[in-house]
Image (tube, rainbow, N blue to C red; front, side):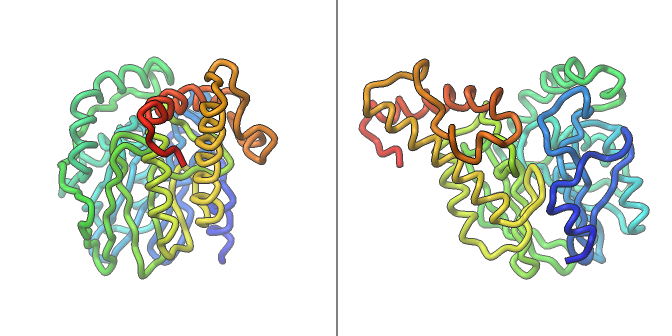
Length: 311
């Protein structure tokens, strides 16, 4: 494993300066934009998405281009330093603003790339991107978001599709109601490369504001059986660093809530089900984990009251 790949797999920090994007090489022709393994904040300018860049020989694929025009322009400059090939495909894995609002930079290219997403992701972006753009501008400051406009994808990706980009065939999975209302996964079997968007975290407590705990667990179980060496999610790592720990945290959350429900407890008095385990050392445990308990409790309590299994 080369030095740049090792750096990426070890959770490299954010780019050195706003608007400057650093691409780390994962495989021949495959790069990932170095980003902060963090929640969106003014201090990191929302630059927290490790954008995947695949130079195919026939054009460039970009997955989750990032949070705003400035980052998108920096991403384009980094791509141009690697290859003169045109950006032909842009995939939005899910509708979170820090993943998709840099579409604005790529939409100015000629030829214009095709912007791809699942039907549910495209619909969600159409419904709420204006509100998300305003909220992100308030959170990060108007200067950071200056010039960022909404560019909507085409609802072209379906579960079971194959996306051919040059010599690489990507298998498409679409998981409804998991990390978000719709999460698109790209898997390149020959490269043993898995791009999962927001479905996998690394040493950071997952954000579950729009999640289905049970749907997310099912999605990760399905992904865990795929032969892969590298996973690109909210960070970069191996399956053992990304998929397995995220699923273990969600399983612990479900088991703790199921036990508390069976004992007649309630969410207000429930101890953290992951307390005392390695998750308490993950980033944002103190602030994010209690919110996850409350969110997951509401979901599982309804299932429990209807006699459905929680395991």
